[in-house]
Length: 544
Figure 1: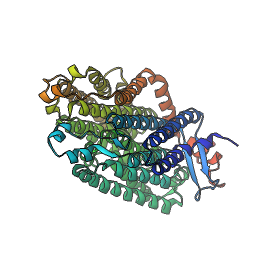
Figure 2: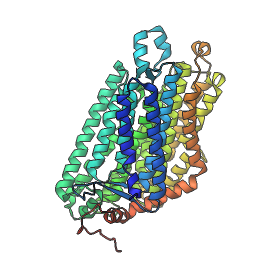
Figure 3: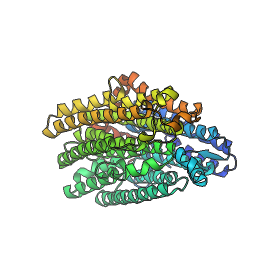
Figure 4: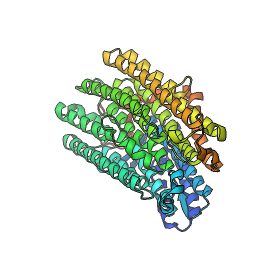
């Protein structure tokens, strides 16, 4: 009999099945493209339905009807359903962008996913340029779909080990995507990324092992019940290990040094999806575990929250100061990415319903806006031949539409009223003021300063790329921005604007998600009611 739980495995299984099909059809690139787009469209449609269903209460699927600790449960509450929908939309737009890029370069046998520096390539090694720009579709589509499956699995995981598996699936795919083309820069950046990712995975696995040894389970609902009875020192150790592992993945200072050197070397669509989405999977894990397993008011949690507030402040300031110093748009955006992770951690560290709602809204906003900006930078690179601000100029005259496509998400990221970035920041600032502690006030001041410096860095980039005197190579260039590439980028810019237009309902959804997260019992009771927990495991406070 059909039930809502039937939908839960689809966002994981459909991309995996499609990845196998696209690999088998590696000699038929058009069929691969149809399959890949169809699979991600199914994920988006499923996620949209789950967003509506989860608003009535968490949807739980117990795979194979095996109960914990043997069985695996997938859970879609408001937070995971919302993240699943946003990630699906972003992945679909990036896939369409990369396909259009390949089509514009006139090949059915290869997918072009990176422009490289065309000005340099024209005068340099043609073979290197070809390797940099082109890769077999047979590799790209299956890997991209596996990445989508890993992201979905991480958002829907109902236990720590399945969350770990989700991370490993997406990380394995990201290793391949980051080093596509096999250039020296990408191999070096990919090597750093691999080492950092492996360290974070080992730390995460240690946390999973410690949690199981202390409680006898890795199921999130059961952990929420049993952790309060665990020795405080052991519980603190589990919490710190989880934060360390997720902090590396989310690029929280000082664990963020790897990011600005890794992401900019990848092809434009890959950089876009990495920057917009992958770090947010780490942020999602921080929100999930901090609210469910280590809720506010627990012994020792206040001290950890203070540490998180300090890290949030340092992440914001160090990141934005790095962005201000950059003269390359990709690196500039990579540093702003690090900086704005600090806002999200700020919301988590305040440990309240209002701050968590603001953090959720800001995560949704940042995924769409940051991905849109990186896609637009890919268009700038294609039109101007480089991403160096010192070698760009005059693009507003030769490509005025591109100027608008960059300006709108840039102002959104900077937090200009009344855009969604402004609304998310106001929510965080209000929560900080309401907290009233000295550290919260310092964070409020740091947030405002970071926002102003973000505006300065992005306006500087916009002025240099679009308004300074155009270099001769830009004027002489006959390169055009393909409509098929511009449309997905414009669609994501439009999604960012839609977050402003429909901010009330979306913020309300985020607030209800935050209320359920800070309550905690809703999640546990849903898992119990749907058979995810064996009889005899009482849900603390369920009857209160």
